[in-house]
Image (cartoon, rainbow, N blue to C red; front, side):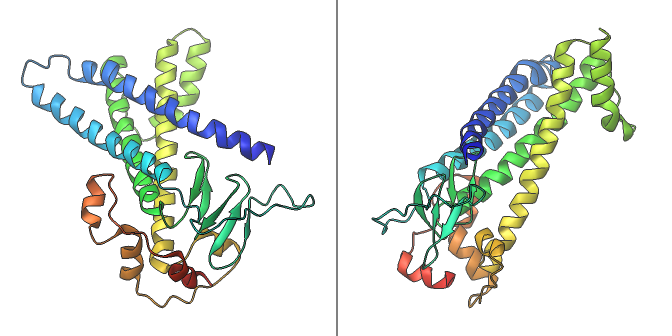
Length: 273
């Protein structure tokens, strides 16, 4: 459990550090190098790429904040359970009744718990699932967009050609070797590392988002899958998605705002049992 609590503290710091580095690289290196003369015909391109980046980053950070602002803890729970001394540290939560879980990391009772997200430092449940899914979508978009600009920067600044598909696969080991040989600078090696960081985070967030949308459409949670439960879904997949994304789901796709009303826990709890 100590390792999980440490991860719960390190993961948000890693997220904010990666976000800060992405901001700095975009506005201090990528845009000035790829579009060196904003007063010429490239001014519209500079404004376009800057607007797209700020829009993606605004939604990623906005939904991140909303995920934390609307925690999934149960409002009707007064007494907090206490784990027995013999409880294994590998178990991060305990199922109670009526769709409620006790999270050992949050030390709270969570309603319709899906999983504990270390990057936000809280549990994902019925109240913040939509924001978490949109956070994953826009984080993936920011990473992939930064990856494209990073590749363009390396092509313009260091004349690295990516026409060969094997270039990206061998870029990191070759760059590391060249760095220790003194051929390339530390900045170039750092940029190469960031390309792989963006690619990894982007793919993980995209895959995790697809999994979460599938579970929501089935009316199921990750906790139920871990317990091997098959949900008797009485609602069609469109109704399940509407429960999470709300009737104004289109607005939620472009702005990190609340688009769904919070239903009664007693009513929604029946769907879990």
